[in-house]
Image (cartoon, rainbow, N blue to C red):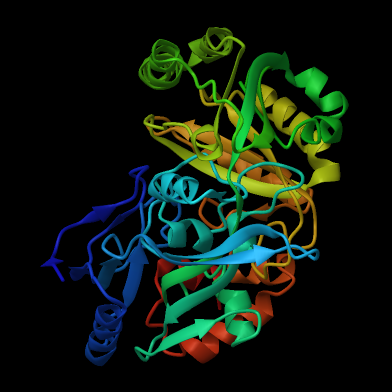
Length: 444
């Protein structure tokens, strides 16, 4: 176990913390020791993954715990369909495992996660605990794939839970925003390895909004990026194929040009230009929308789901009812145009199937996720204020890891099982050992 004291900041650079201690336990017993010792001293404890949350979900002035030394796959149990055929596996994974490392491990076992977000640096526990999702009308978010987990609670005890063992703790902890304890490992439902045929091409927002639900269901995993101040979008459709499909990945030269240069270095230069001369932003966005040409490729699922993100930004994302999404996007487009606010960053539009996770933004309803971004050198305040008012008017729910202004009083009326979650939290952590400024705002 290592000990050091150093400031911490998240990936985006908008959240800072100065913990009194930083710990990196290598066993579950050491995690328990860290929690017990902190409780005896009256310190608070928070666990941090890759720091990709835009909220202060992981900040603390107490003990900051990293699980980077608790990684890898512990066990695999095959699952079977009603006819008795193996149709995947329940895989127990140590909580600190980064998603970009988990993908290849599962592939070598003939398995894959059913869906992924677009940022592969996240730790498994961090991604699950904040409600990370990908896209696809038939695909649920990561927390819905969890079928069991191990949790170190405020008294240092180790609790294993599942739908049949401590079920209320399980339902709360599979999307617990770090408020219930430290997840040390979890069991996720995996499917047989599959490839994705990716098709990317330019289109228009006007055309997409004519039948947004039709677009959402036009592929297994469909999404688009809209460039504000223009009608231009870049469409991404991913179709699932058997794992033994011949792969035709993006060529190395094309990857360097499109994914590395145009999507990162050149895009950062464009954002810097917009920062210096905001009036140029609409013209720059038209240029950016034309720079990414149509392409198609086939690769392992985890390689297609995620892409490199090195240009820093701030993000707000809400899940709105799928049926309301077209009106929300029209309102957002018109409001941005009227306001005079500019942003060089695309608005990301994705979709997800309803689930039964207590704190999920897709709880009991199919949703459209709309994410508004702002370059980290530009002020996000007015853009996010305008967007949030539109999202809320449609019954939107905020992503737990993205910026928002909601409080416990607001969320108690928006999240159906909010009171049940709070009841479990009160029982597991009555003294708020795992509390911080974020949980103090979003939980009573």
